[in-house]
Image (tube, helix red, strand yellow):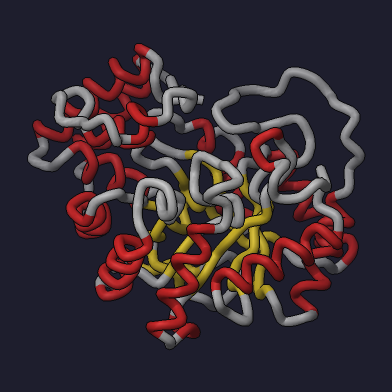
Length: 344
């Protein structure tokens, strides 16, 4: 396994971060425990979850993922050798069952932190993240910024609410997710101006089908020492090639959840066809190439891999042992020129 520093801290996190959002929906508790044990045994020390999970978000499964991690932690012990990250859900019709508040007040943050601690069966969270902005921008599967909304800039108050949780010893560090360059810099500006917690990471989508992070945010991650935690690196499994090769099943994510459409365009399919060809030419699987490419990016702190089967998990973790050649990277970039960022 390879490790990188978490922001400006002295904490080493594994470049492969274990994603968990299928646990409680597509995966059972025992399957979640098996994945956790295998990942940790193979050098993964970074686990990412959220109070909203399992996905898709619904009242019946909300919090199940954290609960499955909690029972595993309680059985395993040795909490301090792991870096545990979770998130507070933002406003939206699919989170109304979690809490009524539509922004990140100190009260909402305190409520969310306490709920996660209870479900995770731990006394502290290493990295606590704002899952998505309260303002009207960067929602899941939406590209671009169309208009100014009536949102009141409360980022200072958000950081003050997080500071209270740091002071209470309930969280150690903070991060943001689904953010824009403006949002990232506003969090940094407010933290510096008012001596409030500084963000250590940005968790945004990043894959061969969505490289928009490279425009603006990548340089900021390097210069501000707040690296990317890349999510959806496999584009809901499309980049594995299983849909192209007719090896998918009705239970696979793209087939099962029809409303999740961000990777269903013809452009995504056509670009993936090209990536499959490149991987096969270089003697690796499409999944290995897709993940290894992210692992090698300078601005990436960690790559969140998720799996519904142990075979997928082993292949995904194994990507850390692959270094792509200059020729392979050149060919990948040529496809990006033909199909620039087809997924939102």
